[in-house]
Length: 418
Image (tube, rainbow, N blue to C red; front, side, top):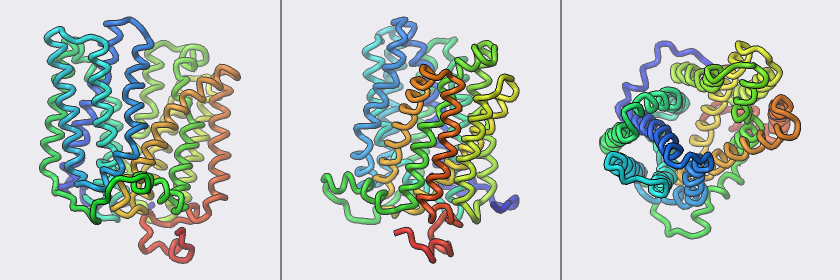
């Protein structure tokens, strides 16, 4: 990894700057809205089940609509898809604000509007992911992804806090601010250059909708990257057990739990800022596998720790290692995929990510019920290391990968992956 302290700022690239500002505005708006929805619906019903329903009405559309959304992202102009999706979310959040301020909102209404937002986000994700490689040159795609990830992490850290502070003035105020941020995001998206299609539109069919699945099966490097992400997330669900560690092992209170939850995001944020200033020039395959292994080791350290300070360091490192592997994995998938297929491949990747996140938390909770939180986290860390070793053997071309782009990669040239 070569340092580039003299590298021109990514924000000097006007299309990327507009994209990044739109992304950070919508991310902040979504995080603020999520905090207000959870607090408001629990205030209305007092049932913990309803908090789970908020996640369910967003997860179901993301799962059912992922493949059709990927097909749409490859058949229509992606900027327009993202714009329509953000306008739909802006209108939905504005409706939440209006109904809340007029005291006309109830539980079913909140869940229905959140479901609409989930549908819009399902169509937005593959189109948004596929836009980035066309906004910057291939040599700085990884830096652009790191910069985008930094915006995501900042929104995850500060968005809920800002939403919570504004909630003092009422949920309607939070929704109004969130809607304003989405309006800004949509306005910025209109300033981006159009991205013309690289192929003639195809009619929807099972073959075209599932083309992303077939593409991934045929490209060993892409299959290795996506499946590594799936199993690493499935096994690395330590954060789902943080309340148990905080209370029963580290003997701290809510303030300690807050620090534990913030530590991985802080590590990821700082690492993403570093990656945005440095370009990965060689041995990206080994760096990716080493980062996932570091994630597993940090998980093991956290499992064995009985001191708050050590647990915070382990979680900070866990987030930093995860960010390195995530940027490399994301860049490899985007750069190895032709533009005409990026929407569908991104949609399949989204299914893997969303499913593994949900199942990872379930797996951790189920295993903790059997062997305890420490045992479950240890199994996850050791399992991650075993997966890294197995994947290095199953995907030798991925392990030997020198550069993010297939172009000018001597190892790939000598050992084609497809």
